[in-house]
Image (tube, rainbow, N blue to C red):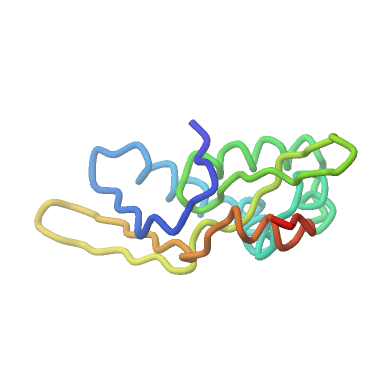
Amino acid sequence: MKRQASYATGPTTATEGDETLDATFDVLSDPDCRAILGAADAPMTTSELADACDIALSTAYRKVERLSETPLLVEGVRFDPEGDHAAEYSRGATDAAIELGDDGVTLTVEDGGVDSLTATAETTGISAD
């Protein structure tokens, strides 16, 4: 399940038994996924991420798919006036904290608190006028 672009929803918390916890730790252990997260400080298409990370496009598609199932990467839409819209991805997290407690591991991921619809409109030149 892909996470859609956030709208300043606040932190995401995953605990023991939550598939998100395992998926997040799994992608963080992958060097290509970490490279994509590093490059995704601004919205980019999968092709742009592949170029920025110097990885094969097919690999980038697989890694982006895996990352999109975690709170670390969110999917948005790059609007094109010609109607050729494209999926774009950006880092969905600004901070993460791991807590070890009696109930096991808890991972809390803080989002950027940025309304990605506004950010998309600003980067693509869309205006309400």
